[in-house]
Length: 382
Image (cartoon, rainbow, N blue to C red):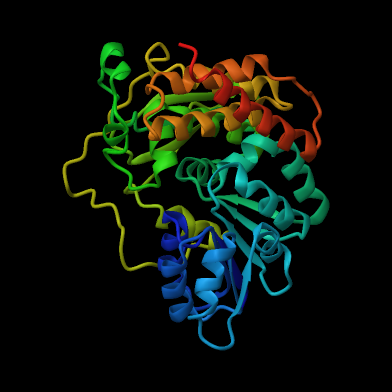
């Protein structure tokens, strides 16, 4: 049975992946990795009995090692997490570590020629050209777990790439979709974390509220599918039933629909190109459903324009935008800046960073650090 390495197993994507694997007896859990939640990791180790479990936090790994059953190798540190991505026996790697921290292990999985089920959009945002070129060289397969990009992948199979007229990413609009600019200035972290349709981690939930999540998805789609930026559009779809659409040159539009449940794109990536049966999660079309679509308001949500800008520029632009956004979101969650400052700070770092047109991974890591430091320095100004 093919082995699965789940990097970020204690997060929402990791837990959903394990839920999906309950229904996929042809796959087995080879290894698990997370940051520092040793209690949840211990539950997973006891249930799945992987060959290896790694926690990036050494102190947490020590706690886990003292309680783990015999036969499970416990590791610690970022290098050990990265090692799981390339080791023999893990044919499938679920890359679900949040943020820029997930790039090293994602790059390692691509270099090792793995099937990479990519939930960490930031890796593609930062290093899309490097990862896609690496996949061609090593034979790795990169399959998106993001619901929007999974929908694009599924819809694109209805035609040839040269027949695509445009790709339409859908956005829920987040909890502040109907808020005025004045209300957004006063938005609190507790309010931003109340997503109307999805249950996600804190960082991605804030990104959904600012629409930065959609900005990053624009960049990811550009590299993942080799699209001209002019072919990418965004519409707000509050119900989160249509996960994205592909419009073809013959005026046909193909969409992928489903309840807002991450298990659906996870299952598709794990079993691609076939579709594995499931017992739950079906869309009940006998019930009354509204499917509303509207253009995004880039005045109230300027993050979206930053995504188009970074996608057009390429190079280090994605790394600068992503690093600055991560730093700004952290400050907002700590109540050190206002909600509207997140996009302003990210835009400032994007505009001022030392741009490199054809960066190496080292250049991208350097840009990421520069952007975070720029946000810290400028957070108190304005």
